[in-house]
Figure 1 (cartoon, one colour):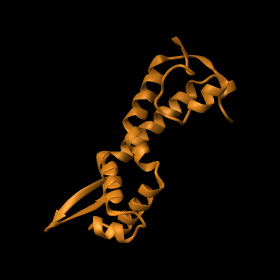
Figure 2 (cartoon, rainbow, N blue to C red):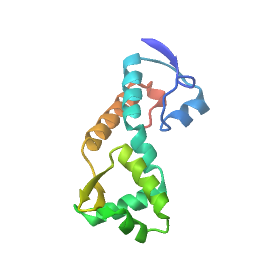
Figure 3 (cartoon, rainbow, N blue to C red):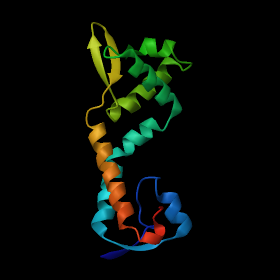
Figure 4 (tube, rainbow, N blue to C red):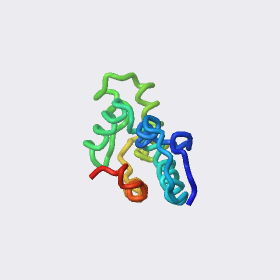
Length: 143
């Protein structure tokens, strides 16, 4: 076991950050638990960033409602108050983390939801969080 000052240890996610900064907890914890949680958060950081914007969530909701065909940029723009360049920017962010995929049909590009990999990665993150919580001393766990 190693001592980690979680206030200084850079876990690149916000879930626990505020708690440990405010409390300044120093825990005796297996470094593997912390490293695994850090890895799982890092794998999902682009997903969290992409889903952390209300405009992107609105665009994504419209894409999901469209079904398997998806929506073109023009169709998404018609459903939004945003400009076409702003829509394209948001689509690029979502495409970069594979939330959506693009399908070219004729001369148009359609965007549709892509759930592959995300469900498994999120399950692994939840497992990592559970292992982290289980490794906390009892006085820091909620009942």
